Length: 332
Image (cartoon, rainbow, N blue to C red; front, side, top):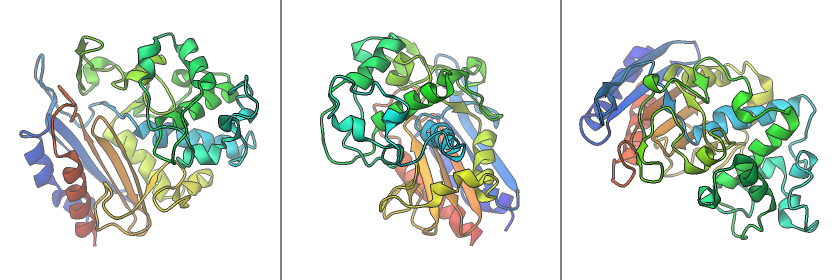
């Protein structure tokens, strides 16, 4: 099957969703041989003015930042010998919980944070404490975090983002990113996200995630923008194993996690048809990427499902699963 034939099997549910459930979407497939097909549907913005969706529309990738930027950056630093996966974060952030040398946070490792195997909470409304990025970073490092079971946690990746800044000497938003990605896109090229009650406007070309916004727009857990072709370029690089330093993303660290990514499990976002050698990740704004290494295929569904509000049921989980099942089924 060609990439065009594979994608054709998944077009109907995306087109239906973009005709009512969500404003718009771009969906694409790439194979290990390099074949690629992309289709765009609906609107990049529905209010205050209607803007059509295009293949080149830039999306707020939300938590895809974790796997498309933060995870590969950490793994490259490991490959360079700057850090070890099982080193403690204090190698890069010696002032982490500096007033309590016995604090649990001081024992956290890069591997644990990448794999979401820490005691840290899922998320905290840090932006409600202020919007000075330097002060918020200090707050994250010195806060006595409540302890709990291991969960998928934005805080893990906020800490990794701070570690990257310390190790590179650069703010995250100043670090180089591949073509098709950026932290400060032209709003005219972007899909709109939410009409935010806190910021008092429709967010377009500004990060939707409130904590990333308060941290200056770029953080370890969110802030990256990108196009469908940029996302598929990353997927193809992983399928081809172009960069051996990143091959660790295929190795399970728990039943449901690899380094940064989700590993296929029952009921996950990528559908039931993919092989057990599939990894994937989603973003709150409505984005997602899945890579089936056994079949040599990857697909991405980028939507602006939170536009103009997150407070409605868009059926995004069901759409993601159906798209994944149709694509994998067509690929054979």
